[in-house]
Length: 321
Image 1 (cartoon, helix red, strand yellow):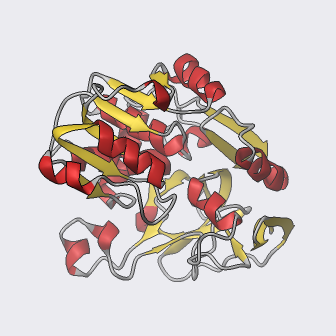
Image 2 (image 1 turned 180 degrees about the horizontal axis):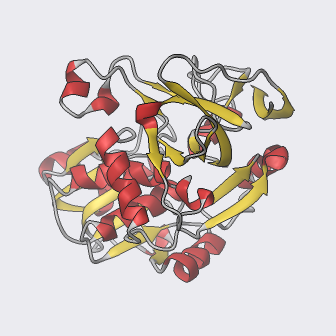
């Protein structure tokens, strides 16, 4: 098969690669659409020791099961199903969890990928594969929103207008949060979000100290965005930290302590959250799902370069094998 293979920092080669081999209980999926995630960008830059070269990246996948022709979106998180966390429905915390695009599982920037049956969600006829590939990034926000709303209610600020931020904003709205704003420094993306997604998108520099939000989502995860979240979380509110930009810095621990601000770190989603996200997409509760740009997988290296250079207004680039 043809695949876009990570060969080292800032090097992606579109080459012939060994076909994946399904094990018992697994299916071979013909990839139709696969999204570029921020974590793929971190790996591309050599910043993720969990993803050593050579490796096929990509975990936001929709396609067709080769054995029976079913159209599916895939939950890329593979868990054991028997540990205490899995039995409690918190399978995203499974100690032996694996995700495609990390060893030992190759990712979806390829013509085919392998996943267990339980990780597949059937698609209705009205959902296109490009839309279905958004289930994974939106599920991150859906899961986090569910956790945040157990702590606080009211208007929300989402920091970061990429796919994770947009997914979080859509999830907040779908789960009943009426006032959702997105802080995004890129002017081109601000305009895109206003026009395409209908959210109030603003430059973070326009926020005043009086702008306080019961729910703040950091969908970026750098010290500057954590500082912004610390400053604008309302007393008694919650900071939901989804972004994985850098491991430390930025949090105002003193203010968080004095104002009883809850911090929640959140990773991926449970299997139920993924299914609930997919159903919300199918029901039309997450909008038109049209905030994407598509490109051939063969031009994936250029897509990564354009994202890094800030030349992409759409929150998500979908690659097509």
